[in-house]
Image (cartoon, rainbow, N blue to C red; front, top):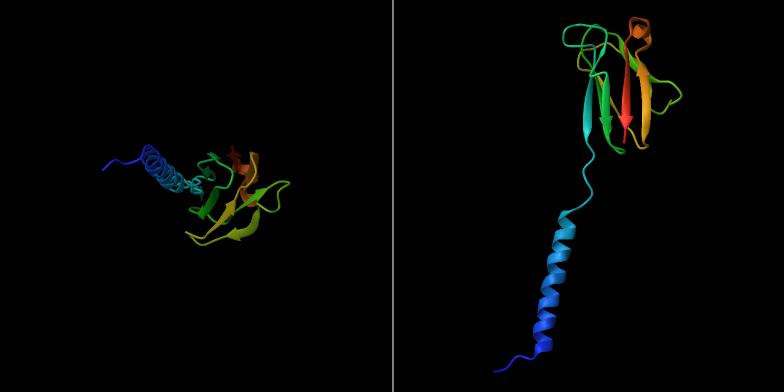
Length: 123
């Protein structure tokens, strides 16, 4: 029994298409990451830890109250990113999603004078 060449080519083409489709489905868009920033260092210093982070557009930053409350995070000129309510309880947290690329500087209102400032760099 002789199989026509066109049938063989169709089978190979169908297999290649199925393989490409399978690979394409597995290479979906990357999941957004969540990066944690502590409000107050583990050593009890009035600082964000880390003070500068670099993320990708679409990623989230989770701010977690750590030591020496109260703390907040205010982004001057970016009310949508700011959290002006003070966090008092250890572990109290909130998240913000950064959709646009840029450099976003923030500070803790009660401790800005003590140098409690940070920066989110969004690529």
